[in-house]
Length: 265
Image (cartoon, rainbow, N blue to C red; front, side):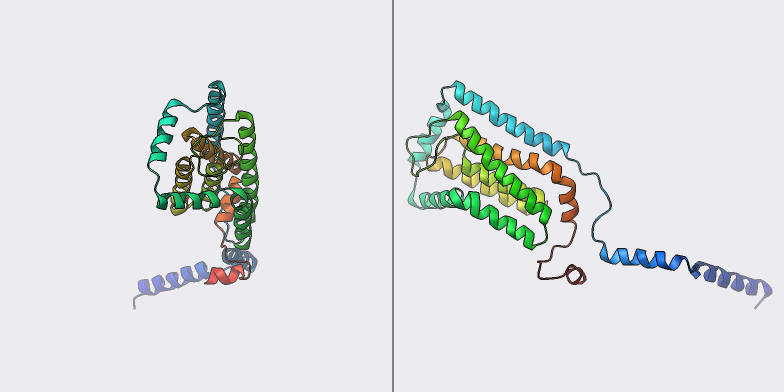
């Protein structure tokens, strides 16, 4: 081997040793960085955009107020096109569809929709380590139910006459529709998954159609209810947005499994 080659080899060895060498003071920092990399699952700080979603929620609630004012101005009577639509739906009733609509009436209202389902959802979120999502959903569900009852009392709209169920007071907005939209929107915002949004929208639309089919609500009642549920969910979501985003990026094993075990799996 020539002197040049020997010098090059010695230089390469020296460079490699210099690259691999580290001072004693760097070891704790490297160990801490490695430890943090293994056990920190949260993403780096990020600015979560709230304004478009918050604006959409406010617009939805303003739309509810405007429609409610129009109903009061029209002496709480249905709009002309709604009477024709209700007559068509009543004429198209069949036993199988009526049975399905009656099942949705039970699932979407009363104690099941306002108490049992929200409690089950909050409990499930807590079990799967989503405490911020549980708090958000609980507050949004209470707020939506409160707004729905308040608007019902203020508007006091009469219900259709050809009705197959025994509803509570006030036709506008639809409580079944608002509860369905609240669940759909809140869970969509919590999980941010396409299939959750699709399932939630389908559930809300089915509930809206069933309320009109049963003669419990006019068309504007169901749209008003959906706007209340979605609007409240969006407005309440805004102050929770950043915490929900970070929580969503963490592992969510059930409480009987450790986070480290789930991360390794």
